[in-house]
Image (cartoon, rainbow, N blue to C red):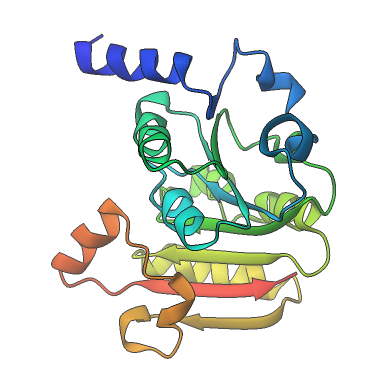
Length: 217
């Protein structure tokens, strides 16, 4: 393992805003986020498969009266968001290092106000369909932890994945559904709050269009 990765893991082990296996909060915080970490009852927003946590950090800066949890299994990615939050004094941010396959074990029904899925792995192979973060099994989890009125956001450059996800979302009778295949030339641009990920900047530089949808379940 390289020195850089070791340094990132060391940061995570010592950072108060990284919750990972081996830490006392890893189990205690589940379904008890307001008391065990945030110490308030503000709405909770999730960024799933958050990587470096660009949306977690960007939204936390924009909305200090909301709490943000970035989920990712890769600790070498999470360190960046954690470090940025600490350097900027954002107390409404934490990162949870674990799979999202058991999301309903982490939150009470209706505990989450909003979810962001931003540029996930498209999983194009048919055998990997159930691993797409817009597959019905994940949508079922999102609906449960958000409850009625929860807001779901999905953003990707991959048109095939977007169209797949759009059909899954439509099958769940969403409310107030909006979507576009060209976010930067649409009336919905303000909905993404101006936050751009590393991948998004790369895709835009390549001339790719960004797809976006937002709805309530």
